[in-house]
Length: 436
Image (cartoon, rainbow, N blue to C red; front, top):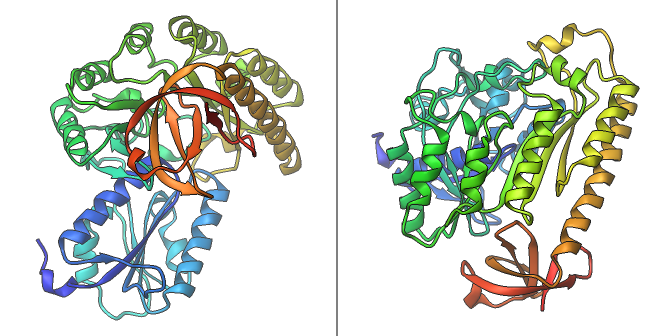
């Protein structure tokens, strides 16, 4: 433990970009700082320390990180600026050149922020602490509560897959996790703190168990055996790791919701091969069919990347036709951007940025159509909704078991409680269904 008096009454502001795993890790860092005397800055106050936890999945993500650094530097000009996360791991020197940055911490160093702050001198140049991630076997468990009612529990980190477009193995290292017993204890702690819903997060969540000789399915069953009133969601799981047995189990589960987030990335087998994905579109279609057979009302979100090198007009047209045929609820669409250190750069055929945007727009329009159709089919049905604390214009929102967003007039007594309701028609801006 550090000398508490050094940090007593210091004010800190956090800014997190990227995936839910980052938010869980920021929460863990925040608890460390809180235990040592830091307070989160209130609106209008000046921070002593700014901590930015970054993402680097695309060029756009890098740009947003730089924007966040510059914005916080303007808002808190006298604060110590600390940048960590995937962008910091991959491009530490680039970040160190940004005006206002004092400390750059790689992936292995992010949970030692207190030590690095204490040892920071008045050097005008940014100090970089970054070790190679490839050989790390450490797993830092973390759990965060967002501004609503949902908790995000980090169950796994790193990835042993080496998809040709992706830098995550370079930024996060090998797949690793805590034991099932440790993970269940963290879930129980979140429940004791008031959690009614916990989302299991990871870089490759279904690969849980690599470092402990266990299986993700066994973790699911251990969490499902908890006696508490709690809902679990699986944030994302690779289709080749989502077994039919697991689908059948979730269908009759007490705690796991009929809600799946499954990366597809492309609906073309040729492009999937270029990406070095571990399945083909036929396997993916079978997974969707298995889910819908077991859980007809399940919400299924799907990740897709457009414009990768080698994705010709014909291959995109084929992918679009396949994706349109799937009984899914939403698409999460990403435009490809070239990433240093990835083997996809070796592919000659390049899609222009204009065409990448066009393909993205096409899939976003398809996603809107799919989501509206799914919601329309829910009108008039009964569901259990967990009401959230956020509200606007005297309205509060909540989500059903199958992730339908509902809206009703605000009632503080309902926050973080589950109620059975009948789903009515659309609200005014078509962002949710009303409660009858």
